[in-house]
Length: 270
Image 1 (cartoon, rainbow, N blue to C red):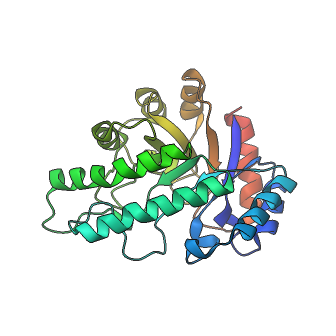
Image 2: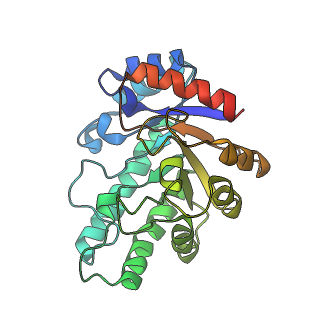
């Protein structure tokens, strides 16, 4: 198993120091939230991107891709009935793919609950079709860079669209593009009726990426969820991707969370 951590864990420091902290905790991959780099990704220069890549390499890290794709943006939405909004979202997804490729990444995790939730009066079937019509050209463009979009089911507490792996796979199969696959996240998986192991096994052919965390918003092993069933299933299906730590609370400290998470990953996932 290969272990990565999301860079916003250390967003209180420079990118170089983020890489330093990730290396110190034992990670070999870094997953990036675009908003931590710039409020406007089109303004990130080639020279700056080269500096980011060099900083990661200097600390033995691979930049594996992007997540929180639409966080802290305006005007983008996956299921909006407004044609202009969906077209803008497709264009932005292409910009993200360009950034991901320039950084050396291969995965784009599409979560962004606020920018996919259905509003009152939006028909579900129509919304699924609208989402497919955004994701199809986005996946086609990502394919030119060798990048996979990993769609993320999220709990009903966060969004009312794509709450389960089963629902998300139906959308993936509707698009039917090899560069649109499934992302599994332990925090979100814990809200499903199926157990972690069954979710991994049942969706083995679709899984592209995986986040290790806990519903308490901390790292793996820092809450009540036992990851062993998921780890066992990932080994059974010969998962070759990354196990990436994504947290949303930073107490007692980012460095301590990174350390404890790595300790748990090595104990349970290896």
